[in-house]
Length: 275
Image 1 (tube, rainbow, N blue to C red):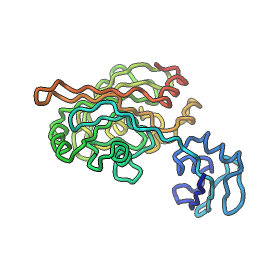
Image 2 (spheres, rainbow, N blue to C red; image 1 turned 90 degrees about the vertical axis):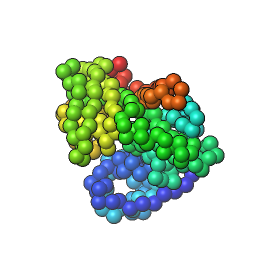
Image 3 (cartoon, rainbow, N blue to C red; image 1 turned 45 degrees about the vertical axis):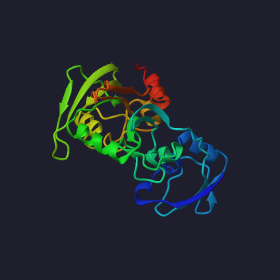
Image 4 (cartoon, rainbow, N blue to C red; image 1 turned 90 degrees about the horizontal axis):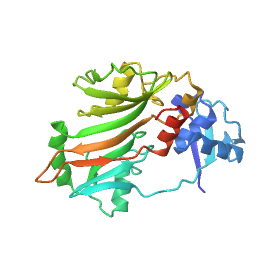
């Protein structure tokens, strides 16, 4: 076990200790409470075990870092230079020493592996990588010409109407369209399938928030998530990239790759009685 020491940031001031531990250690609140129950957490040198202990700016927290089980990244499909993997939530796609890109480079013993596109840190599902820089460059025109189909699953807050089939709203000055299909719904939440050709930053999250049906668990666009008490137990934004479809290339058939809904997502669906 290793110990970690950090100082409370302005954005963390006033938050419960358990929330900050969960966020800093990228673990569940249940795991954070285990640390507290084991009396392994200190605030300003004083042992604290109350999950709701309110933190102040510049408080110094010392805690045992929870052990995490490292599983190999699941490779969904390989075709030539292309590698499509099932990204776990809580991991950035690239740009960090702890990114999915770096993990793949190590696991496949290939330092040239590079991300072709990205998912948000807390979004799970299909992500495409290339084993070579040339392979990545060959894919760029397909993304620019909107030939790659990206299909997502999301749990949205509220009862989404069947009339909401298309969302067309500019994002950062660029056109963006999201196709919406309701799979199941009730008074509290809706289970959606969403299809996008464009890939604007946070497109689905921004579009659904604009329709007043934000993605459940979205800390940036959903605001305070009241209503069903289950909402408070949601570990991350409920958004999953379930399918990628690439067009025919060089006499090869279209590539269709799917990633199953992960356990944490399925658990929230079950709790909300959605299917």
